[in-house]
Amino acid sequence: MLRALFAGAVSMTVIAGVVASAQAPAKTTNSGVYTAAQAARGKAAFDKSCTTCHEPSRFSGAAFHESWDGKALKEIWDIASGTMPEDNPGSLKQQEYADILAYFLQLNEYPTGDAELQPGAAPMAAIKVEKKQ
Image 1 (tube, rainbow, N blue to C red):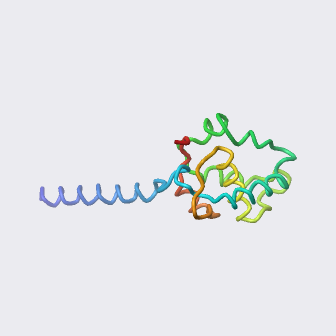
Image 2 (image 1 turned 90 degrees about the vertical axis):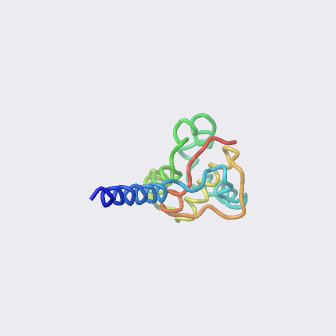
Image 3 (image 1 turned 30 degrees about the vertical axis):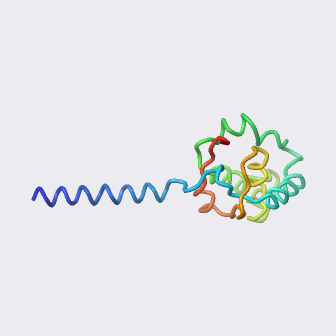
């Protein structure tokens, strides 16, 4: 009986660990999660669709880090893709939102990588915002 309880407890611990690791972001913003070309497209999209209400400085430096450090990039994604632009929420293409987030990462001097930041909640949930190393 005791062996069965112990085996059950071990199994539950292993399952809980697997579930927790599946939910934890696998990469950070220091992992090179966007490309320079993508950030350039993001700047163009931001200039076209966002500058009537927002300054780029709002998405960089201390203000950015105070709001987002330690959180999944998905939290920024959800706000951007769900509520912006304010006069027509969700009207940009999913790729444009991802490009704009890449631009924000460039503004904060995060390293570029070989692959583009992929649009969608799931890819964004896999990336944790972390202070630049």
